[in-house]
Image (tube, rainbow, N blue to C red):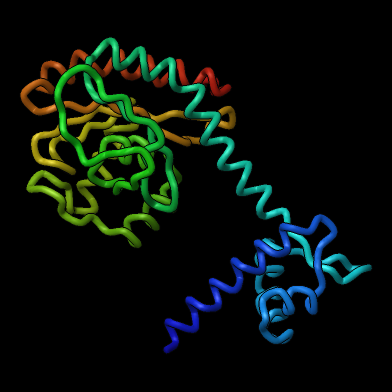
Length: 256
């Protein structure tokens, strides 16, 4: 029953946001309640919560409610991701042409990575990845490339919340060993996934930095173990790092 009430409250909150967004000058509690056909006290409670979190704001003079600046902030983040995808496309194509393998672009979000671009390459390869899908950070090259450049307290928080679940026999599940590997990633400038997320798949990835020096994304090249041998990974890392540096520079990043 409690779970049903929570779902109903969330549904009502989203409905209120839709209603408020339709009126530039905002709406009063009574108007919103009439449109939703629920009592004013319920509407007021939901509005108060939305105001507290910045999604709705109240005009002090008219007492009417309208959208808050939180949506502008969220839109800005979304637009940043879209811009990143657009800026990255030529570099991803260059990497795809040079390697003939699958190329990914991911962004960091709430302790996970999200694939925002995927180029298939010319070689045959079946992977679980697809644009819009989330993936864990601890067992993917892109995830490790990002984690290695996040503040340590953020890394520890992610590990505490997400853990180090085993995806294959090669997944690193020991915290100290994993933190040591992140140190190696920082030193080398690239990260590897040696069948740690999917059997038969190896990846190499590099971090992408924005104009403020913060890591915001990662680019990877993925292929089957039969092609992504130790020797080939050794040959690839310089080129992949170069692409990462070029894209970061395009976003305004200046190496120290």
